[in-house]
Structures are given as structure tokens and as C-alpha cells.
Image (tube, rainbow, N blue to C red):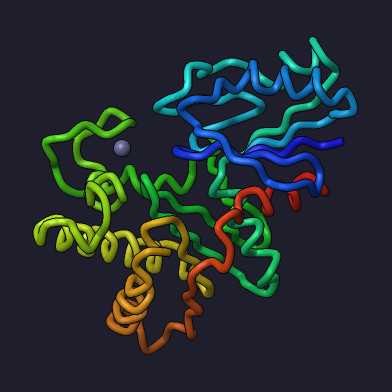
Length: 257
Ligand SMILES: [Zn+2]
């Protein structure tokens, strides 16, 4: 039996094989005791797949703002103690794998998620773009504008400080005019950066802020119409993800190899 987990910034969701998805609060869930209790409850669990909202590499969580087990080798620990294999993947990489499964003819799939934070992921020629340290796509941490705030990564000028649910301090609708303007300027900057670096043919948007503000889709379509080299660019398909648990669906696809 497989246990699938989507460990997000706010919600911790899990399911066994194709069972119902159950939801806990991430800040109230300690990962290791949770996994141990599940293994003790269901001794047929042989593999655990985790989609994680942070940086992961080779079975380790490298960095995450609100989790205490940084640099702990989860894979090794659970294999040695329970003979259970643990597979970790970044949540947006998982979501990108799900989106790619619907559009397999896409050469370059770009994904933007705007929720509590701002992230991106890319599938190029069918492969997740990872970079050397599996941290390619951290678009929210590109320097943009200096703010009187510190980002989780340690800087004070990250795009995420302008483009995220955190930056809006609630909903877009109720944010002040300066915050709305900066949000859209930052988003346009990120979008044009990706258009020019990767020349995608498919752009998928997701996350709570996008779902609650579908005008963002039209905003980016308009930005695309005004993009550099527009005359020689092929048509770009831009759409909003059709599900809100793309990470766990992508994780299931990855678990099947
Ligand atoms: Zn940052």
C-alpha cells in the first residue's frame, strides 16, 4: 500500500492508495510522528510519497520556513527503521507533472502557483527542470524590489514579497491600491522573464490567489499580446489548473514511474 502526502504551507493532505483525501493543518502536524503512526496503523504501507512545499533533494528536506526537520534524511530513517521507502518531491514539480499528463505534446510547460507564496515549475521535453540542487524554478525569490520585510529565504527584495497572498495580506480585492499595483507589476515581470528565458507553449496558473482572482488569466493574456517578439512567437496556451490537488495527482503519476 502507498501513502501519499501533500505537505503544503497551510494544509497537510494525505490518502492511502486511491482512498479519500484527508486534511490536517500543516502547522499542527509533525511529519515524522505522523508517518510513524500511519505505518503502525497500516502495516501494509510499503512506500510513502510526499509532495512538499519547500526544497527537497535525495530524500532530505533542505529548507522550509516552518518545519523543524531540515537536512534530516527521511528516506534513510524510514528505510532503516521500518523498511518503508520514502520519496520526496517539490510540490510544484508534482503539480507540473500532473498538468503535463494532460498536454503531452507541450514542448515547454511553465507553471505559476500563487498562494501563500509564489512558485513556478517547468517541464521541458517531458522532464522536470531541476537544476543542480533541485531548486530550479524558485521564481518567488528573484530580486525585484526592496521591502521592509524579510523573506523566508533571508533576502528583503524577493518577488514573493510583492506577488503572493502574504503580500496582499488577505484578498486581492481588499488589498490597498499600492499593493495591488505592485502585485501586478511583479507578476508581469515574472511572466515576461519566463517567456524570454523558456519560450513556453503552455502556461498553467494555479494556487488560491489565482483561483479567487480569475482576472489574472486575462491580465497575463494581455501581457502576452504585448510581449517582445510577439510576431514570431507561436500561440501560447494559458489556462488555470482545473483541479486544486494537482500536487497529489502528480505525485501519484510519479509513483507509477
Ligand atoms: Zn525570498
